[in-house]
Length: 533
Image (cartoon, rainbow, N blue to C red):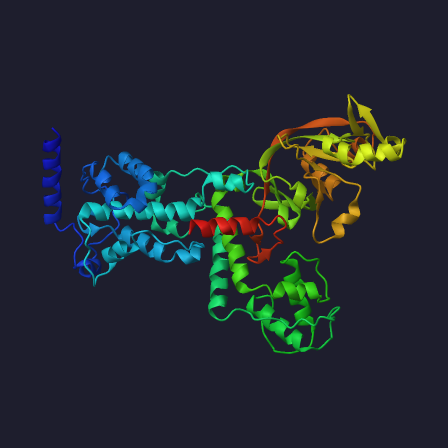
C-alpha cells in the first residue's frame, strides 16, 4: 500500500512539473507575464498533495530547522498535506512577499538570520539556479514563514518572559490561521492590529527614523561644562547651538538656525524634549538634561527594539476593552481608558528596586474607604518591633494597634494607605491606594513604595469610577473617605487592570517618549535577545 501511495505521489509530481509549476530560470519572465501570482488563499487551485513522510527526510537534511517542525506539521495537517506555496504558475507571489519581509527584518527590530538563507536566496535570485527540489522548496518556504512569524509576531518564549518578571498573560497565535490570513491579504504583513498590539507599529515607525539618524552619523555630543548650573532663556553658549542641532535632528524643533542664543523657539523645544524624556518641564536647561541628550543613538535604538519585543507579548485584545486601567511602571503614571480614549490620568509612586511592583494583570473589583493598613510581617520585624523596643508608646504614636497577633494602622488622614484604596485581588497583595505623603509626587523618579501603587489623585479616581453609579456622589465619597470607619463597595462593572513595563512609548501625537529603566529590565531583555541571536 505504501509503495502504491509513493508511486501515486511520484506521478502527481511528474505531472505537476510537466505543467511548468517548478521554479526555473524563467522566474523573471513568469513574473513579467503575471504567472507568479497570489492564489487568493492558500493554494486553492491545485490541491496537489505530497507524501508526509518527506517531512522526516527534510528535517534530517536541514536539522537547524527542527524547532519549527511541530508547527510545520500542524500547518500541513490542517491543509491535508497539500502544497501551499505552488500553483499552476510556480511559486505563488506571496512567496516573494515573504522573502522580501525577511530580508527587511532590521526594521522589525530583529537581527536574526534564517539558518538556510542562501538556499532561500537562490529560490528568488533569477541569476542563480535553485538547487532545492520542489518539495524541499515548499517546505523551506513554510519554515521561512514560521521563522518570520515567531520572531516578529510572538517573540521570545513565555518561560523566558516569566523568568524576567513579566507576568502579564502572553497572547496565543494560530500559525495556520495567520498564514491563511496574510496570504489572502498580504497588506496584513505591513500592519495587522488583530495580531500585534498597535504600539508595536508606532515604535517600528520610530525605529525606522532612528536607524536613518544613525546612518547619517547620529546626533553627536553636546558640550557639558562641569561647572554648569543651568542655561536660562537669553543665555548664549556654544552648547546652546549644539542643543539646537540635537533637538532639530529628533524633531523637537522645526528648524536649525544655528543660533547660540537660548531664544523662545528653543525654550519651547526644550520643554517638549523634557516632557517626552520623563523630566518635569521647565525653561532651565540643567546638566541632567544635557546628559540625557548625550545618550548615544545606538542606545536609543536598543531601547526601542526591546520595547517592540515587549509589544509582541501583549494581546491586542486588551486595548479593545470598553474600559481598563493601565499603569506603566517606568512612566510613573496611571491611565483610565474608556472607549479608546484617555479619560483619567494620575501620577503614581511604584515599588523600589528591592521591592519591585509586579508586572501582571487583575480585575478591579471593589473600593475600600477609610482603610486599615495591615502591616506586612517584614515591616513589623524591620520597623515596628525595633521601634517598640525604643518607645513603648510606638504603636499609639503611629495610630496602630494589635489585631489577632498582627499590627494594623487605624483609618485616618495619616494612614499610610491614605483615605481610599482600590482592590484587584492577587497573590502578590498589590493594590492602588491613596497616600498622605503627597510631596513625593513632585519628584521626577518615584520608586519609593514597598510594591503597591500610591496614587496622587486617589479621590478623583474614586469619583471617576463611580460617576455613573447613583449610589455615590462626590459628597458621599468624601464622607466615606473621612468617616474613620472602614467600609467597602463592590463595583458594578469590574475593570481590567494592567501593570506593565515599557521604557519607550509613542503617544497619540506620534512623539516617542523615553523613560528611565528603573528596574534594569531593558538590560536583561537585551541580553536575552542577543543570546537568541
